[in-house]
Each structure stands twice: as structure tokens, then as C-alpha cells.
Image (tube, rainbow, N blue to C red; front, side):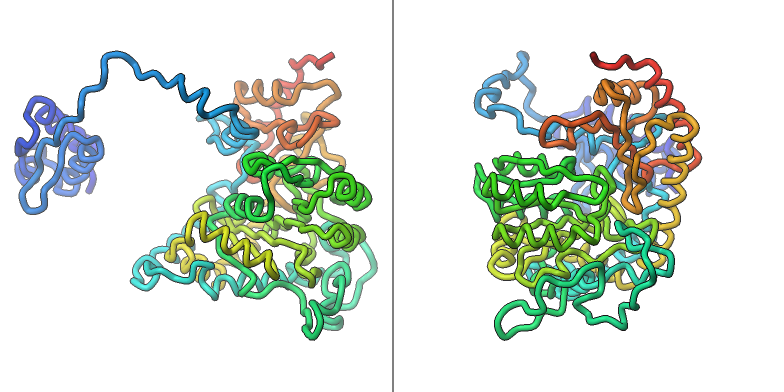
Length: 519
């Protein structure tokens, strides 16, 4: 058994000997240290590994432990890095905001921000078991297809043809208004399952379109952000225009600016982007690329309504443009059932489809898929090859084992229940302490609430003060590509336990009571 006190004694002895002895000096053996400090061999080995990591000692197979070679002494004067300021040029947009978004909360703070599930909601046991089994198989460590395992690509492709499942009577599809019961999916043609008909029954002369993407259209990526960055670089040139919903995902704005793109916001509301404004933006800017999150958009939680889905696709088609569909929240439905992806209604290859498992499983599951038809798909697959060759084989194998096992569906069912509990706990706390911050539209899925602040409030100042008060929130300003029309906060309900929500909002209420509106 590992004994920390004994390990500390071993470390102290060896460190003292290493500092006082010349490089190459042999140090006491494991047997000597075990007897001297009444420590187990495991404890002694752990102490030696610590000193190896610090560069003080080195181990030689079959010979023992020795004092490591000394590093060259550092210069007496500090190095001058000021020249880099000129060489690097101005800081890129979004760097500080992204670092703040991914920062771990301070000790003792209640997190109402973050982009990942609370550790209690992550299926780490099932993922760990799948990864352990994959790691024991030698074939998993070999080079596979650069576009990713075929079975994993096929799984992602099948997911583009499906909604979450048939809605029960009285349970509307996410983003839809309640309506009389419709025909069951089994009673309708495959191309009509969902919320609107496909644009065309055919994908081209002499070929049929049955909805969704194929395995050959997909490429496996190391996370959604990597997939998005590759897409922007592959389909644009520096100086091109990217249209985005307003507000939109901060990571998309940062990736667009890193690619040298001009970002133009398009107004959106509780039903998603406004189709007439999207058409106008295409006509005014000549843009050929539009980024959106049609399902539970981050940060607003909005879902593109059934009426707008065909209108948005038509606007993209008429402009001869591409639509990047970031389907990050496919597995984060809370109420009702999610509609199929837009890619399921796109026979002519206008939709670039992106689906990640990181948000719905665990931060360490850096696996996503990027799908596109035609020459665009070939270009995206080539771009991914240049970026990082391929995703590690053991991770791909563990992923396909997990998502095709009963554990995946159990996790999704539990996640729906837990996210509903946490969302409702946060809403209840807002009703008690800050009723003015309750969003006008409650999201049916996702991880966040987009809460309005009083007019004149400085959202960044509020977030800074809240962190000092022990609750972390994220300001709304960085989610806009232009000036925000009103101040907001993005409050995350997936990062803290339901029991902590009331105290978190109480702390936030105290902060807001002390904030003076900006004149």
C-alpha cells in the first residue's frame, strides 16, 4: 500500500543525496530504502518516479538509481523576451475569452459557467472500461484509415437520419409549438420524418436521396473545435466573410478570427436565425458560408423552428453557399424530442455537419465527426489529414464500443433526467432571488440559460464581482460578433449540483444589488 509519510521520507533522503553528490553517483537501492524507512517497494518506487520527473535522479535498468546530470546554470540576468511583441503582432480576438471559458472554477466557488458536464453526470466508469479493453488490443494501436474507423463513421452517419425518437402525444418536438398528433414516423416516407420535407427527393440525376449522410461522407476528428477550425480553413481564404447567428458560440468566433475571416452577425430570436435577414446578409456580403447551431444554440438555448428550417435551407441554397451545422447538443434534449439534423433534409451538399460527443459524455472524450457530400467532403477530409493525421485508435475503438452498448442509452436517459432537475433547480432559485433574470424562453435542452440583466448593467463587471463573491458566471458580450443589443449572462446548469443552485443565485443576487447601472 502507498504510504505518503514514508514516501516523503524517501524523497527527502534521496533529494538531499542528489543535491550533495556528483552526477552519476549511485544512490541507495530500493531494498535499502525499504528497510531504512519501513516502506513498501511500491512506496519507494513512487518516490523515485517523483524525483525522476523532477530531473534529480535517473534509473538504469538492472543497475539501480543514480544522480542525474546537472542542468546548465541559468543566466544571472533574466531573459529579454520583449522582441517577441513586435514579431507576434496584435493578440488574436477571443484568446482571453476562450481561456476564461475553459478555466477551472476557483476553490470554493459554485460554477454557473462551463461547457462540460459535472463530473457526477459523466459516464466515466463505462468509458474507462471501454478504453481499458481497447488499450489491451494490439490492433487498436496500429495505423487505421486516416478518415477514421468505418464502423464509427457509419454510426455518426446513421445518427444524421434520425430524430431522438417519436414524440409522445402532447410532447412536441423541440423547437415546435404544441400541435395535434401527426402520423407516426412509420406511416410516413423516410424523407418526411422530422419537421419539414426534404428540399428535393433526389440528390442528383439518376441517384436517390434517402436522408442523412453516409459513412464515406464522414471523417473522425479530435473534438468539435478541431473539426470547426479545419472546416473554416478548408472552405475559406483569409478575408472571406462568415455569417453567424447573433449571439453565437464564442469558440466559432475565435476560430473564424484565427482563420482571418470577416464575421458578420445575423439576428436570431427564440426560434433561431431570421431567414429574411439571412438572405439579406448573403446578398449584401456575398458570403458563401453560414455557421449555426440549430439545436439548443449556445448561449441562447434556441432551437430553429419547424417553419424556419426549410426557409433557412432555401436561403443557403439560393446563395450557392454552405451551412455549417454544429450539432453539439444532439444528446442534450431535456423536454420533448429533438428534430433531425438539417443535414437529413439536404440532398445537394449545402450542409457541412459537425457532431461531437464531448459535451454529452466527458471532456476527455475528444471525438467528433465532420460530414459533407461532394467535393466539399473531399476537401474537408484532406484538411483534417494535414491538421493531425488521424485520431488515436484506442480512443476510436473505445468510442464505438461505448456508443453501441446499452451503457450509452442508459447514460442518455439519465442525463435527460439530471439536466431537467438542474435546469429547474436553477430556474426555481432565480424565481426566489432574481425573478428579473428568468429568460423569456426556457430552453428545451442544452446546458445553459441566457439571462437578461437590467438595462445599463455591465455584464463583464458583474461576472468579475460574482467570481469574487464565490459564484462563477460568464458575461454575454463575448458571444456577439458586434455590439450586443442588451446585457446578458450565460448561466450554466450542468456544472453544479441542484442543491448548490439556491446559494449560487443568492450570491449573484447580492452582487447585482451592489452594481450601479452604467449611465
